[in-house]
Image (cartoon, rainbow, N blue to C red; front, side):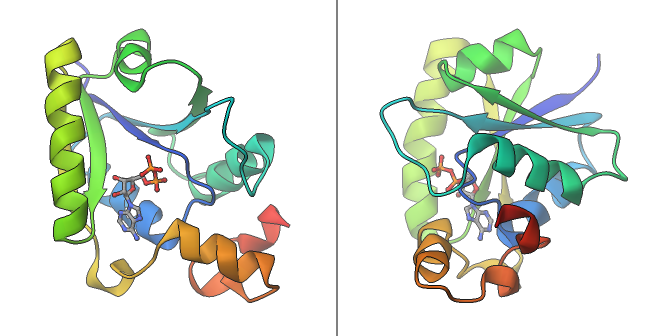
Length: 152
Ligand code: ADP
């Protein structure tokens, strides 16, 4: 059976930390789908099509990686695309606590297991919320985001 992993998130924007998680996941999965969850009641800093184009630009040499967006429950989207695992990243113990509840609830809802990759130490401080704050204040986000020019 083909091993398909779904890496879900808002990716507003997709940082070097996210990128490192996908690169690790590529060793274990036949296909990695980066799923951008869209919540219609939320406003985002970067447009959805911009985020999709940006993420695609990072993995042009990896046919095993695809980018998609969804507006349904993550586990329902995972089933729709035939993913057998959900991929998440862990930066610190706070992430672990939060991710543990989501993973257990997702497991109860669907039987789909989550797998976690530890963030590369170089990126453990990278946080999309702070990257957005830097961007809004005209700071240079290219330290934290590869191909950041595609987002502006
Ligand atoms: P969400 O808003 O659903 O948490 P994010 O896009 O912020 O979505 O994060 C998606 C996943 O990436 C989460 O598992 C999160 O822990 C992980 N992540 C976020 N930042 C980093 C980072 N710097 N390094 C590794 N993983 C990260």
